[in-house]
Amino acid sequence: MRRSPRKTLLFFSAILILTLLAGCSFGTGGTKKTDGDVSSVKDRENWDIAETSPLGKYPELVTYTLGQMKGTNNSNLPEGQTYEDNAYTRYLKKTLNVQNKNIFMESEERYDEALNILVKDRNLPDIFLVSDRETLEELVENDLIEDLTEVYKSCASDKIQEMYESYGKELLASGTFDGKLFALPETAIDDGSQLLWLRRDWMEQLGVKEPKTLDEALSVIRAFQENRMGAEEGEDPVGLVCDPGLVGTVSTSYSVDSVFEMFGAYPQQWIKNADGEIVYGSLTEETKEALGYLRELYKQGILDPDFALRAQNNIRDLVVNGKCGAFFGLWWTPNNPLMDEYRKNKETDWEPYYLTADAKRTVEVYSTFWDSKYVVVRKGYEHPEIVMKILSVLFDYSRYEAEDADEVNSYFALNVDPTARPLMINVDYNEATYMVTRHIREALYSPGDAKTREDLSAIEVSYFDACREYLGAEVPSVEAWAAYKSRISAVGLLVDANYHAPEKKYLGDGDGEIPQTLRSLEKKAFIQIIMGKKPVSSFDSFVEEWYRKGGDSLTERVRKGIMICEK
Image 1: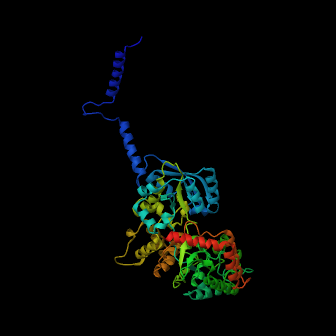
Image 2: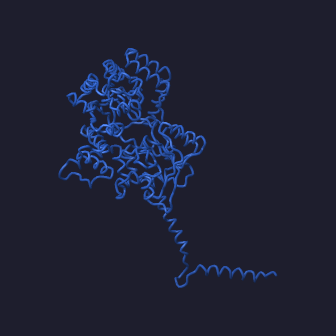
Image 3: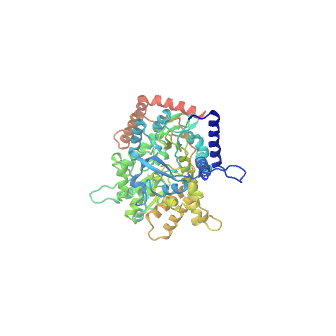
């Protein structure tokens, strides 16, 4: 039976009224949302806070897939801990309610290759590290990663932004394309000048004095050689070990940068010479003189006779196994490789010497972002702000404000590698290394109104406790020994010398990359000169060949790039 239009209208009106009444609460002066609606609004507010603030905690667990660069020895994580379950990940889950799920893991040597396959297949994790400029540019050009400009403003804490600003505008600009921030660069904290590390226990055995100059240090190494220190019967003593690359492009361990620096030479770097001309540092007269000096060291047997055949892992084995008593390295050398030798032999005693304090730079040296590390976010990932929040927790909140981050901060003294962190980079002030040591020394040694343990940041407390253990223990732990030798002995030398990081100047975007053909040409020429297979005068022929084989056009390109960059 059909209803009349009027009855139909009344029927639906009644249904509507009953529906409205079901949602009303009488005596309150109006309507009220159900508990579920109130919860939903509150939930949305919590999500909004989390997505727009550095420390806002997500209402529900946010899981993100991660491409992990593995460190050696499981990144020195404590036994039983993994890249998905460690102090960092547990603290991030507690503070932000986030958890990483690693979908691929590769060592540093194979990481770029593995990532390139994922890029070609368009099969990217939510968050991943990019460690070469070419891949970063490809990701941007193909619209494969998120624009992080706005989330940096809202979710990077004030202190994180201050840290980036301490490097000048160029560092953050290196991750910026067409005015948009697509990649968070690692802050390359200044590591200071190279130090010469010598076996002081061998020096004491031989009764030789501690060196104050490079020439005196070489005399110490000659004494090691003559007395066959570290060599067993049938073995030749090693001398000053040296990577065949001669100068350091990444870590500067086992290189001889300091020897070149004493001559005012800066090979494998672009420089502006005293005449204001941009040149490749490997081609200068100063470099030629330094090669002649190294040639003499090789002839005298002070420089490792087998240096041209060494690989980094082979050199490391010489150090760890007690075969070597001298090499150049940075302040963190006790953490790697000396820690492993001390673990084997507690009688070992290495001491750093700063022998280039008087070597003043007379040229401007340019840096490049070609080998920098960057954190990026996959295009379309729902929570791009998560990377800023993680940085804010790990490098600001846990170090300067939190009272529940002891396990996280203990990792510094335990020498846990930065690759153990979910984002695999480090963010800190440009001169953080020296600031930390100044504060630790004040707390350890200065009386009166100096700093106390309570005045130190979390990272400083971690090192302070380890250094205090070293000073009080008859046989310090490996971690305490490494902390004291690196932070107090090594960085202390730089602090006492009033060392300050040179102001950085940057090349254009990757323009200074040296082709492999020219790299090989240079390496061969340098080794032949040092080993005496060719005269020092052959350096001039090498320079001519370098320019002829493409160096000429490369130099012009770099000069134009620097002019644009400095405008």
